Length: 156
Image (cartoon, rainbow, N blue to C red; front, side, top):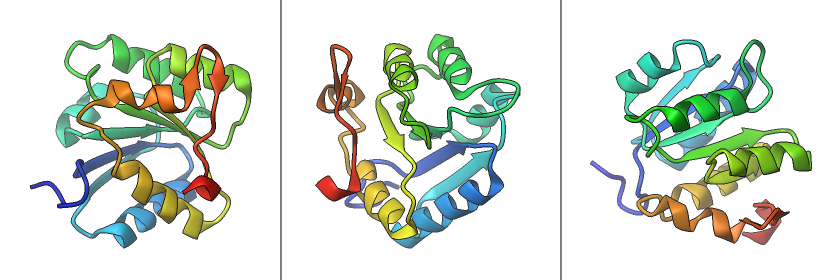
């Protein structure tokens, strides 16, 4: 069942920081306790994890040990069964090189981790209401020909 004002129900986070996972889960549950949320802390065995949880959206951190989020993004995008799942890069990095790489490898949105919990909740409310049934329409609002227009809480 889809939560009425949201087009997604199953949310998956890949982030090696346990505190970030916990805050993200709290934010998701504050928006609605009806969301299904799963978090894994590395990209190892990612396909078995995705298969078990069948996400509507994947939030993926860039800076992780062993295998970076960009490497993980590339692997997911190359996998026939999972490449249609929209991926939102969720990172503290604001480096143009990272942002360009994420969009060039198929990320649908680049979302910089906000410093305040309330900003995270507000941002996630907006992100989860986006047209994820048509994910290819989303990147053009934030990235065009190498120009990045940040998704920011102050714009909401």
